[in-house]
Length: 315
Length: 315
Image (cartoon, rainbow over all chains, first blue to last red; front, side):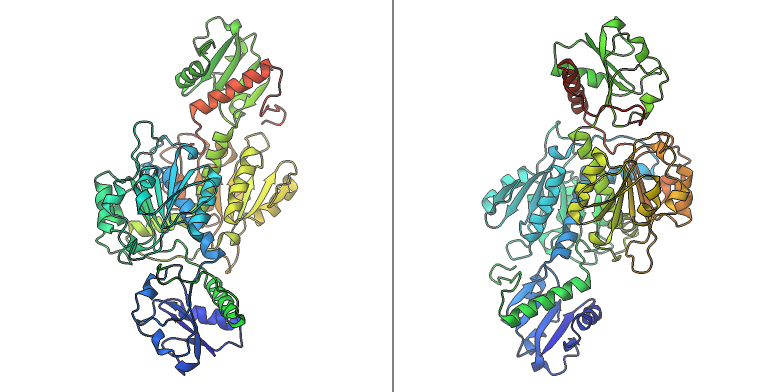
C-alpha cells in the first residue's frame, strides 16, 4: 500500500515528514504516482481535477485544510471517506487569529497606527470588552474554540450556525430565520463558516448593512468584519462599497475571492482594513502529516475517523 | 464630611459620576476646596505637591491609577491609608493590552502590515503559541490575570516577581538572583511592574541583551518587549539602541520616560515598534468612582480596604 501526497503547496515537506514519522511507509508525491493501484491513502490540497479518480484502490482522502470546498468541486471525486484536517494546532492558530483581530479593532489599533505614523499622541475612547458584542458565524470546532477564548476577555459572545447549537456563555442563533436578529446583535462579526452552496457570497453588502449600528452610547465607531473562513463567502467589491459608504467601519480579511489579492483591490489600502495572506491558520506540516497518519491508522484498525466530511452538507 | 477630586485629568467627569452615584455626597473639585477641614476622602491623580497636606481631617486617599509612584513622590504626602485603583475594569483592559500585543508580535503583524502597504502577498513563518515563551515581569493582580489569558492560547508563560510566587501553569522566578535565568527563558517580555526605586530604569540595554536569542530552530525572529507598566521603568534611548543593534526585534510601548513621547524619539517611526498613548488600561471614570465610593464605605464600616499601598514597598 502507498500514501500519495497530492498537494499544490508544501508537497515535498509533507512527504519528508511522513517518511520521518513512518520510515516503513511508501510515500509518493504527485504527479509521480508509480503504480496507481498501490495507492490507498491520499493527503490532498487542490489536486488537479480527476487525479484522485485514477487511483482504483483509494480508501481515504485527508484534506490538508479544514475547508473541503475545493475538493468537492472536483466532479470526479471518488466516493471514498474524506476527512478534513482540524487539530489542536489548526484550532489554536485560528483562535489566535480571531482573538488578535477582535482585540485589534476593539482597541482601535488601525487608528492608533495612523496616529503613530503622524507622531500624534492622542487618546481615543475605547469600550470595555463587556460592552462589545462579538458575533461568530460558524460554531464548529473552530468557532467554539474562538468563543471560549473571547469569553475569557469578557466579550459578549453571540453565535450563528446552520443548525441550532448550545454553547456555554454564547447567545446562539440558528438558521436563515435568525440571521438578521444575530447581525443586529453584533458589533464585531467574525466568520469561520465552511464554503458551501448555501454560504457562497453570503458576506455581501445587504448582510453587512444589517450589522448593529448603535447610537451615541456606542464607543466603537461602527461594525467590524473579520473573515478567516473562505474567500468565496465574501463579495470583495461589496465589502469595499460598505466601507466606502461608512456602513462597515473596519475589517480584517485573511481570504479573498481571488488569491493572491489583486493589486487593483481597494482593500489593500483602506486605512482600517487589515489584509493577511490566508495565513490565519497555516498549520505546521508536521501537524498535518501526523494527523493524516493517525487517520490512516484508525481506518486500518476499523476505528472511527475524525472530522469525516458529510458531502451532502458540504463540510 | 466631603469627598475631594484632586485629579489632573477628567476631574469634572469623576465629580459628575460621584454625584450621580451618591447624591447625598458633598463632592468638591480641587482647587475649590471649600472648608478644607471638612474633606475626609480624596480621589487623586497627580495632585500638586503639598495639596493633600492642607487637609487636616483626611482619612483616605484613593489613587486613580494602579501605580502610586507619582503620589509617593510628594514629600508632604499625609500619613493616611492610601489605596490603588485596581478593579475588574482596569484588570480586564490591561489583560486585553497584553494579550493583543503578544499576539500581534507572535503573529508578526508589523511585518504583515509593511507587506500590506507594499501590496505584497507573502507568507512568513509563524511559530505555534506553545513554541513561544512569554515572560511577565510583575505577578500582582494584573500580571496574574495576563498569565491566565495567555495560558488559554497555549503560550509557555514565565513570571518574575520581587518575592516568590506560585501561579498555576506559570514557571515562576523571583528576585534579582533569578532575573537572568528568567530573561534567558523569555521570547516576549511583557512588563507590568510598579515603579519603585528598585525598578527605576530596569529596562535598559543590559537587561534587553539578556533576553533569549534562540538559534535556527526559533521561528520568531528575535526578542520582543511590551511595556504597559510605567515609563520610568525603561530607558527610552537604550530600547532604541537595542532595536538598532538587532538585539531587540520589536516592541509595544504604552509608556515612556517623558509623555507625550517627544517628536524627536526614534521610537515613533521604527517599523516594528508600536507606540500607544498610555492607554493600555484607561479605565472608565464610572468604574474608578464606584471603586472609590466602595473604599470609603468600607472605611466607614471598619471593613478592610482593597489594594492598600505599602509605602515601604512602593505599591
